Image (tube, rainbow, N blue to C red):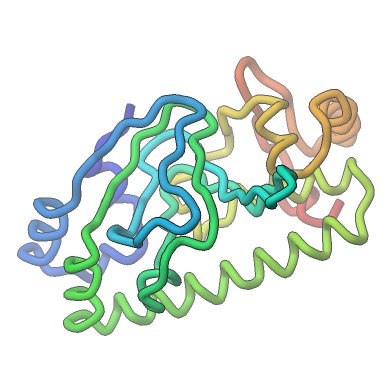
Length: 222
């Protein structure tokens, strides 16, 4: 698996840090490995860390009192999440679940607040991140309400390749059809059909254990 150093090297917000600030962040940020299916944090938990995905994949999800589950989005390697809850000083509003064996970086709230207080570039990064996440949620609502399953699968896959939110992503992603189903709100069997359609359209290639993206803009527009 990748290391914390790999994550920080790939993160956009670290580019402007001084050597001393980067060393402090690295020293104060813990790494945690979580098995597939494990809750990283639960709705209602106090927010104590800003969390980055070093390697693996997690989903933001929520369960209604009646037991109905909805998945909001996936967070791919290179992504950080939870800044909104930290800024509002509120408890978590959703569950985070590992979709496979995942390595996480846990930056303490005190370190996050120190960056806010001392680094203008970090504040600018957070504005861009929050705006990008808002656009992602708006697109998700639109996709769920207006698009048919093939397009929902295409857009959900494309969302994992957002260069602002997930700068560490390359042209391939290790992801199962079940995981794509969680992210798109489509059954695994229907995901299989959609992937065949997208592959025939020349937008992606199904490879062992995942996908190779051939036409990202095509997926976004499908």
